[in-house]
Length: 484
Image (cartoon, rainbow, N blue to C red; front, top):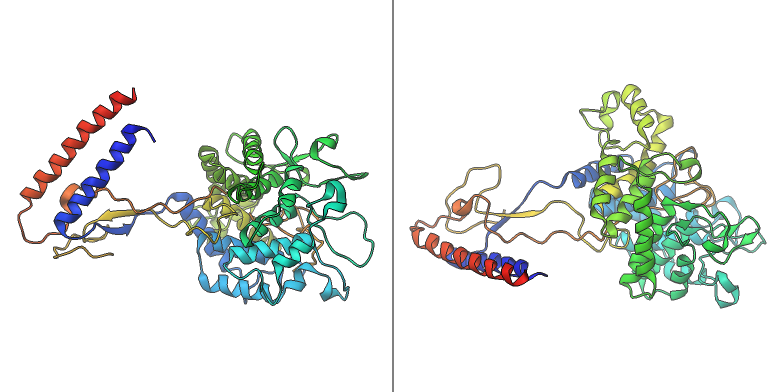
């Protein structure tokens, strides 16, 4: 930290400490208005919470879509919205582990989906549940048992599915691998092999491919696959997983994450939005939400803010929602979806797409990284010191301040990929480790007007404060000269 900044910080702390000593108590703290993107994220989460029924979200073909329900659970956990719904969702997912990561419900025994298991492991950790006893399953042990071992050659470290029959190439992809890294890092030691396999899916340009396999079989790395398609969504997931791995001390993870974030910056549209690959190439809120979250996680604040602005433009409000104003808070998949809903409302047919888009997009607004959801306090507001009065009430003299389902192998139907699910995989859920801002410890903007009144004259207090400020200015000038 530059000397001048250290001096300024020290001055602020010294001034507040002296003033607190004079008044006999620390400044009161009340919540200032939340940043616009955080408010938008919470409004989106509130809408999404209203779409749950008995702890689950429906899919287009079943009354419960467990992949989408997990997406919703992670989204609500990121924003801290609606604790009862979060708890109900976590309980329902725990009761239906095998409905999501196996074919047992369809009478096909002996199959365990690796990607779905890894996603469950992550979701349990993010929801502050016990991943080693989630619905009676040790998801950490099960995920570890599905990681390819050394005898798999260049596939070592890959999350795979278990089956009693020869079903051909494994369907796991970069989303699944990212969830494996995230879940294992959140639940205990992280095997380096899982990190190394994920890094091998990164091409020299910085982007990640979605599928580790080429048409003629597994390819050792992204650069070994001619014409590999680099995917925004997969890169965003990988960046967040690798940032979590780097925090865990995994070699090579931090450099790969930074390189991936650099590539994402090059893919951002002028309006701040992102598109995916294949059928999701056009600008959409799913890709923008994932990318914005990853950019925030990587410290690319300006680009993350631009992505949040693009997402907010797709959010229904009471003012812009038109025929869909009753669904204020929901986020459209793209501009066409927004325009259609504003004109005719959200139809039953389209509602599934809105649920999936909102679950992912709000993460780009909340800007809490996947690796920190459930660990850091959800973003709400920035505390601001005041005196005894709230921002909306006149000050009152007082002696001291007062503290105011669908089957596992299927992806998302229609043109909208789920927040955490590319085609043919369980839906993934998806930014900069955003830690809640510490309470601000500078005097209220209104000067001493916010200090508690004890009945004594405040002339001496003003003199002390002015002396402190004058001395601080002198130190600041000297510090700037030294820094120059």
